[in-house]
Structure formats: C-alpha cells, structure tokens
Image 1 (cartoon, one colour):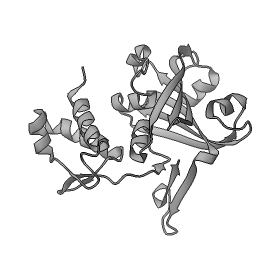
Image 2 (cartoon, helix red, strand yellow; image 1 turned 180 degrees about the vertical axis):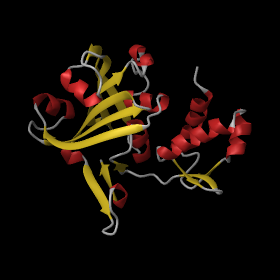
Image 3 (spheres, helix red, strand yellow; image 1 turned 180 degrees about the horizontal axis):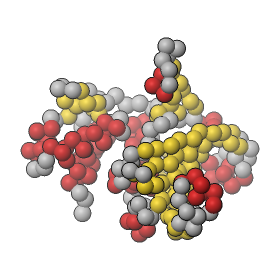
Image 4 (cartoon, one colour; image 1 turned 90 degrees about the horizontal axis):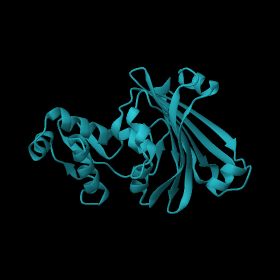
Length: 246
C-alpha cells in the first residue's frame, strides 16, 4: 500500500504528465490539498517540495505553486529521474535490468564509498532507452544497511534511481564527470562504435552520513552535450551552472 504522500505525489504528477494541468496551471493551495486528501500540512509541503525539486512545479512565496515549463536540459548536479525527463521531453521511456545481484564490494568501491571492504550491497545494471534507442547505461550499488528493502526489490515498475528517489531522502551528494572511450561491451549496449566518446557521470549520495548509493551512468557522447552559463562577477559554485542535454 502506498504512503499517503506518495499517492498525492502520483496524482499530481499524473495530472501534469497527461496535460490535464498544462504549464502555468495553478496547483491547488496547500489548504485545498489538505482538505482533498484529509492530511496534514507537513505531508502536503513534503509533496510540493519534492515536485519542485524535480522541476515539475514552481513554488512562489505567498502566490502558491504553478506547473513549470518543460525543459529538455538537465542540471549536472541534479539527481536524475529518467522517466520524468522522458515525459518532459515527450519521448517514450523504458528500461531493462541487465544484471541484479547482492555481492560484497571490493577495495576500490570501499574507498569510494567509505565503507569496509566486503560490505554486501545490491548491484544493479540498467539500460535506459528513449524511443527505443539506448540513452544511458547505468551501474549502481545500493547500501543494504541504509536501504534494506532493496534486497527484495526487483524493479519491475521503476528503475533503481527512480525507486530510490521516491523512498529514500538524501542529504549529501558527490558528483564526478569524466569522458571515456567505449569498450566493445559498452559499445554493444549503447549501439555505438567501439572507441567512441562517452560522457560518464558518477554520483554518490548519503543520508545524514549513511551511504545510500553509487551510480555510474554512461551516456553516448554524440547524443548528449554540456551547456554552461557563468557570470564573470560571481565566484564559487554559485557563480555558474551547467547542464547536460540529450
């Protein structure tokens, strides 16, 4: 059975994705949602905050929330939901679980995650397809100490990243962006030439200091590009933004 906040979120997402609520449509005020679902303000606020973080709505202080304009660009430092992005872009999304096993991590993974070598994690490999074309190849580790329910999850309905986003709040994230050349196996999976350039995004997230997941997502280089916007007067991370777009 779904938690109430998940049901409210699914209902609102469905109205937006179906076009019932187009861009600019005013989302019911918090007190209206509280009355409709018979829930607390905290529950409604949690739902709206999540929708805003995922780019579906724009929250305006004292003016309520409206459905956001769709965008095909994705901020590099955002936590990605492939299904949501595909819906925004108007493409048909599906995924394939290529590999799923529970196994101990090696020394290299232990160093990256800060966990002892031998810690048992769920390892999942997923292929993401947009309009039938491979768009990303994802290799993910999920810490079963932090997310024990993942041990019995087979991701029949949602890909691992989406499943985690909907169930486990994260407080810290680390990202590494790099370029690689596709080996024969990766080229076969992504339907590209061996040696072709790929963009790799490595992401690790924590919840209040507890490691949650590590994802290594590889994109075909000729199907994605980076966009950056910077201000010469600004300094530090707040001085610019970057996005990756299909």
